[in-house]
Image (cartoon, rainbow, N blue to C red):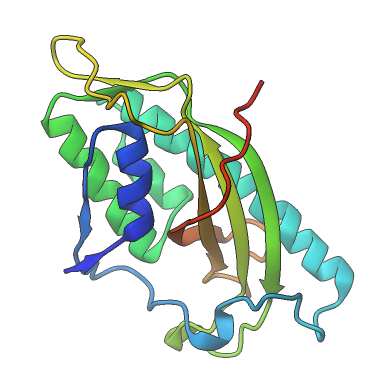
Length: 204
């Protein structure tokens, strides 16, 4: 069982200290291969307009990802299948498991998780071998804001720690396993990892 650090950290920020694990998803694509992991700079062989187009699509997908997570955590009647429209691979497995666990415990989110800062760090549009995980991938740093978010139990009592931070940083890899057929709409959040950075300012 692999442990997803980013999912644990964001879950902790939302709750007390929820540590969702990750089990193998038989239907998940292969993990992102080394050549698909974006480097610290834009790939020199990628035409600027193509990279910019991918960046805009990924920006929109990240915002949709956080909005869908809020909807699912707020309402237990929501269809978890909606996660497949925004996540894939290990991120899909982890988020699906976490939301199910919270629903079973009778917990629900109140308020919206907001994006205070979003920065595209790099773009790699190599799609040479999708079967081995070599797919277009974009590295994104996100500062999320949960200052207006509470999590309550069945009785409506808050289960949020008083020490919970209001903001935190996560680095996501957003990948497109369907690049050849859907270069714009095939992006999904594939993974995330917490970053040790100075907190950003909450959304005003």
